[in-house]
Image (cartoon, rainbow, N blue to C red; front, side, top):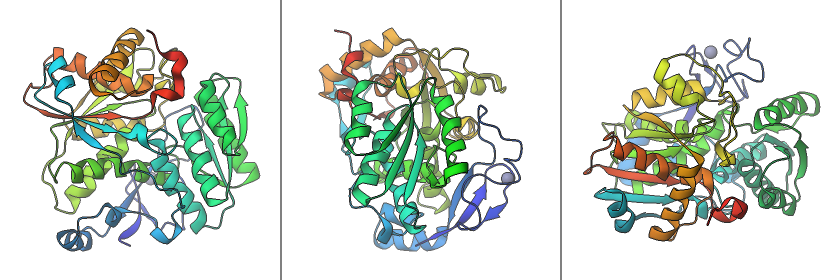
Length: 385
Ligand SMILES: [Zn+2]
């Protein structure tokens, strides 16, 4: 394994993996639930050694921060990347690829983070993994814990779509519904872990959630014949998938495998726009009243806002917002031109891509990867036909 240590994205201090579990102790001193995380850690690898191995056998496992011997049995990832000429033509692009991560075992990209977190729990001999979630991360953790024989403790808002709450229960997880938002569930789960123990899988709070999500970016690169696309379109709630995709290409760049980063297009719902405003103004403030029907990106305080904005700047990307009506239209367009049924949050990416193309943020000739983050069957009640 080529994982070396964690490094704080705030102060740069380095920690061994068994020295610090969550945030940089120095930079998170003043952290309280309800604000974007400070002192988020990033995994650092032996990039020279990876570069040598990559020449012989390009394999995303070279960039893994947990040994494969600890992986749970349920395989995740390796979802298809395919070209859609029909959708490309419909929205005025020449080269559009769909990465369909709704085809993960529990139906969302979140399986990637839960897979690595459960592996870490096994390594640490923890019997319990705890998370707050709008729904998908909880379904993912419930499924991965079931496959490893661990207990999953889930804090989710009561308002999560019924199919997601059923998914959590069907895998035997302990579900604690919170009469409030995702942000309230986040705070409740931290409180629980500090009192009851277990490994907390809250997104970005544990650095391996970003490492798990990173695998989607590495797969896109390999499946695209080791070419860097011009743009990757990512629906953004708490900013961790965006950070994960960014980290994939940063790791490839650090290993000298690529020389440029793909531009990232962040897409947020209009009422859940904290990352977009932070990117545009340079000043952070919460989303005022997140009330989008795209539940998976409905977030007042994006936990990884600082890293997400940094990723957008470093990649020369940008962020746009879309209305619920635009998301609904995009959901049907995607379903009817590609055969992919995406949940509302996952359809937001296409709505944002259409907006960005209309504003000439993207060029017609650019190669674009549209990341579909969750399956439409998770929330059929949201479909407007
Ligand atoms: Zn620090």
